[in-house]
Structures are given as C-alpha cells and as structure tokens.
Image 1 (spheres, rainbow, N blue to C red):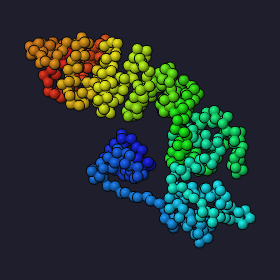
Image 2: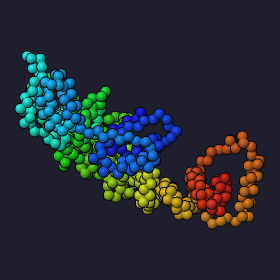
Image 3: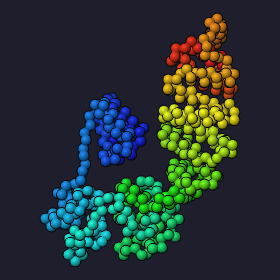
Image 4: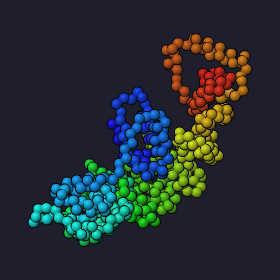
Length: 482
C-alpha cells in the first residue's frame, strides 16, 4: 500500500512515475491511495493530466469525497474530548457545529481558542469540564483558516512568533540542530518571554527550546525524532504570511548564510540544497559581486548533485538560478564557472525536452568559449537535442564538422566503394592475425582527441543507422582505425 498526501503539490516527474506504477499490469497486490484538495487542482495542470491519464488507461479508481464532519460526529468528538456523556454536551456541541460548519480543523482550533480564553476550563472542585455557553455562542470565528491561524500565532510571545516564522521559512520541517542556530541568534529579540500568560510560563526561560515546546503543546508544531514540523500546511502558510513581504528575502538570506557559516567544509554537501534554496529566495538582497559568484557556485554544486540523483527538473532550477545570479561580464571574470553552468544547464534541459533552451545555452557556450575543446560538451548536447527532435541530418552535419576539427577525415557524402573495400580488407587481415588474448592486451586509448572523436563517432553511427545512410560503413571503419 502506497499512500501520498497533498498530491496537488507533486511535480510532473513524480506523477509520471506513479502512472507507470499503477498502470503496470505485472505488479500485483499493489494499492495506491492519494489525497488532494479538489479546490486547488485548477492550479496544477499536471495533476489534472495525471487523473485524465488514469481514466484513459481504464485503471480502476475509487473517488472518495471527504467533506466536513456531521453534527453527530462533532457531538461524539466533544463528548470524547471532555469526557462527558453526549446528552450533557449536546448544547455545547451544537454551538461548535454551528460556528464551524463541521470543518475538522476549525472544530479543534475553536475548542483550543475557548480554552485559551478560559471559556472552557477544568474545574478542580467539581472534577469536570465546564464552559461558558453564552460567551461561546457569542464568540466570532473567522471563516478563513489562514486568518484563523495567523490570529492564533499573533497571540504567542515574540519569541514563539520568531521561532515559528523561521520554521515557516525553512519549509514544512526542520532539524533541531538547525533551529538551535536560529533561536540562539534571536535570543536578543525575546525580551518579552517573561511577560507571557501565567499558564505559558511553566517552561524554563533559560531553555532556548522552551518556546518550541510550547508551540508543540499548542498543537501548532509536531516533533518527530530530531525534526520539528508544522501540524498543518495552513499553519505554515499563515506563519509565513505574517512576515512582511519586503523582509522575507532578507530573512531567507540570513538563514542561508547562518547555516553555511556553521557548517564544516566537509558537511556543506549535507545541507547544500537547503542553503542554496534559502539564498536563492533572498537573491534580491544579494548585491555584492563576490556574494553573487558564491551563490552561483552553490547553485552549480546543487545542480550537479541533483543530476547525479536523476532529479533533472530540480537540477534545471538550480542551474538556471546560478546563471541568473551571475554578475555582468562574468564570461571574462568568471570564465570556468560560466562555462560549467551553461554547459550543464544545456544538458539538463536536453533531458527535460526543452530543446529551445538547449539551443540557446549551447549557442552561448559556442560563442563565448575560448577554445574549441571547451565547446565540445555543448556541441555534443546540441547534437543529441537535434537527434531527439528527429533532425538527424542537422545533427550529423554538426557532428561531421566537429570530427573534421578533431582531425578525423570523414564526410557525410557516400564513400568510394574501392577505397572502402580496401580499408575493410586491411582491418579484416589485421584482426585475423590477432587472437582474442592479444586484443585484451592492447593498451587503452590515451589520446584525448581520439577519445573525444570516438564519442562523436559513436553518436553518428547510431544516427546513420537510423537514417539508413551510406556513410555508416565509413564511420565504423574510422572507429576501428582509431
């Protein structure tokens, strides 16, 4: 059984993988369950296409619409929560149902707010829960979950708000070790920690994590192992929106630099994606040339790592960000970095099928590269992109041009049969006199030009075979002769 939540956020490649899994008739005893918000799929065309693809392939699916909970369910929930029979909580549960409409998140948050405001309290004298029915009925409830969450967060101490905003910048979850860095940096801004409500001061104020422990108790954050995470994505969204828009980029930049500063050189790779993502979101506040070059290098490293993990779309985003952040005149002042970024970006886009971008990036490299050797990687990518578009003639034309510059004499025109037969017979005689054992003792090729030529010849052999071109025998002979 494979269950995935929030499928509306899945990327296109993940959805393609899921489609391949559920459509594979050879995979038995496999149940795929997914949940998504049907009011958000209009913003995710890839999910719409995924659902249509399942229907087109006649894959058996069952749609379950999970709506609000019923009045009876709310009554049972309230009864279980405050440990009283339903006939004693009916009037109270009716108020909650009327206020929330049965929205499960609203129900729990409304109960929490009643407790916060001491409209729902536990009587030690009577040993039972009591509530102010009139005040509860008169209490307003916001019909927007984001506004509701934001209001709840604003009721926290400045220290708690600061911690929860930082966590929101990090995403849905963050490790305890990284959060410790942020909280330590933000201690100076927590002067009002002692001014919180009495029931919120049961924590040791000297403990930097007491504020996060409190948010866990409040149900805003969960802790699993060494990771803190938001209990609901709407809470994260609300916390992030509380940060003024013109300050978000600066905060992301600060977070990225803070993590990078406290990461040993041999551990940077462990937080590479995290640091790069944060700094990319703060690009508008990175103005110094040396900082922009450093960020471009981080994006290159992240792009290379993503490619090694076969996450091509993520690699493309990093490489594009690295190119965009390069300073003016970068080809002159930062030649190697520019060459690697553009060359790898062309390769990544070739994998995604964005061939127009491949042509642009490869064209820039071919124009700006200082030597023919520095252009070879871009030429190879361009040839592959043309072949993928079934432009085999254009691909072979460029390939033959590259081979000529590498010193390999071959042309796309049909070879002379007499010369070709002579070359084939010479190779045949040589191989006839050579045993398998002798072939295994041959030295490996060391000439860089010949090794590069073999790579281009290999590509052209495939394309010549597909086009049934007469140049195929001459290409094979050239490979054997090299």
